[in-house]
Length: 458
Ligand code: MG
Image (cartoon, rainbow, N blue to C red; front, side, top):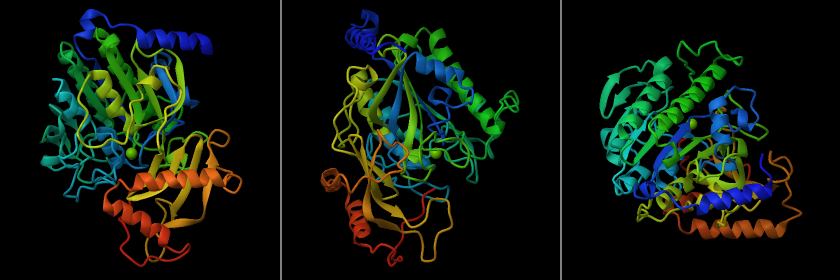
């Protein structure tokens, strides 16, 4: 680990170093690898006993974030925010989409891929899309030249494997999905090395049911979950290796994260909560970013980042025009490069379905509301309802990252400040989101459902 002084010096030099002439003529490539249901505590470089040497090397060669968030603790909304830089409650995907759904990410939303098409990028999505499975919502309609993958979660039926809009298999042979995704990614990099490219690789795993290829089954010391993680890690190594062989590793921003916290397996580390919860374990994710020569090797960022920030950051880095829709994310390039350790924002909101439940400001996190039963537990009689807490709970995440000690009573001015920030932000949301907020606050604590209950997200 470099000293702080050495780190700042390296970071400053990397951020200011002029690009070589050939590189400056062409915007950099972007690779985003996105695991499904992988926990904050599931990588070696985040303290896990699981073996992830390639991801650990990626961290050692780039920056590792310790406070990076998904905007939502479940699959589809997280992807919506990653792709658009906007809260999922703004873009019409506030909950998980099912094969029975006829909806998806609307065309009024501009994805990273569509944004980069404006800079003539080659674009490919490989893996679990989960933003609408009907042809009009698939990646080809959202800026991707090509798509190879399974369009939603691997526990949903049917489970097709698609190439663009054509079904290659049904059901998909899941044991070789990671292997085949990886082969596709390597080929895409090989054939795209002469043009700027964007590879978005949302893996199917470690979402359950777990599957690993024959080469990895039984290999780890941590059961099938460990096998799956080791294969994902191998896949990351293959992608980084392909960048190197193609001669573009020094001209590529490669990122790794996960859509939400761990489900029944996997580890949230020391954090409280899992998938489906707005406690930290449900939404705080590993985030690694590597760009040799631009991002200082071996750095750790303790500032707050979000999947919402990926689009504006990529836009700035690649010289792409920002979408016309107002963004919720901010450009975190100064965090990636170590120029800054923290950036200002009004607050970071934690949504579950349409409901804002918490907000993060500085080191503080305020919990306002919570469902009357935890996710994936049986719903109580009358349905699952978002209720205001008897009194808002405030946690100091620097001193108490696992949200054990409510310090609201000692910090009334912080509670008031965050509430005011939530109110300001909420006034800019679509009316159904504002209405859900008002209805939650108007509910009596311990009351039962009286109106329509939003569909349970998974
Ligand atoms: Mg997920």
